[in-house]
Length: 327
Image 1 (cartoon, rainbow, N blue to C red):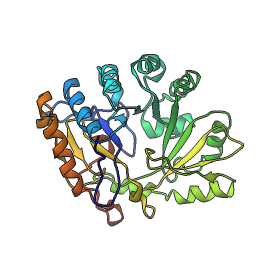
Image 2 (cartoon, rainbow, N blue to C red):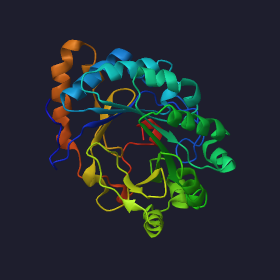
Image 3 (tube, one colour):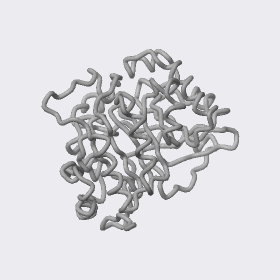
């Protein structure tokens, strides 16, 4: 296998693949009015196209795959996608990011298909606040699914919480109570500006470094970053079973450790979540005989990856909202 590297020396063993742009939540920071399908949009990649895509990326050294959306569990053949992905030679870690609405019902099925890591979006442990953010009063069911995943010894269970000023940014004490006995990783994610959320961003953005200061003062210690880890700076504390990660895209050198690429549900390669362009790979996913051409196409595009995003300049690229690209 040939490692996929860019001109800045970064390697990319980690692919985030969106399998559907649709979502059944109405999160205030992403799809506040719900998902509305574009009648002119192409259908998501088929199972055969996904298989060819993954074979191409594993040829280039990809071994960690995260299935995203929208909300991936909206897709009816999600379990088949997992089973197929887990069987691709070279894929050693199969993860998914989900809102957890089907977790308690389908966890066993997903684990049997090869899922070995899951991130669940839980923006608050307060039932009313959770419903306010997501548009759904489903917190208790989702937390039950997470406890089920822990009881089933799923190797990696993480929670994602988007920090929103004036909404959930003062809830660290309740999260600490939750983490004391649960061996989960909690990710606090700094709100990011996208193409359609500028007023919301201005009202609710809070810098994640403020939370890091609180953690350091409370005795939490920063851990070394694993080679295939996501973008979080992870902290641990001897008195807690769980860990806390901070994803701070506006911090200095955030992009220096970038190790992941993205492919949209319709097969566009995105070199950055906030990039200015997509590279259509779907035409190269129609036959097994196209594998070499696909590998060359992916490898040939990596030189176009920028050293960093341009969020500090207010440039959000072609990402209208996070569900459109896979977050």
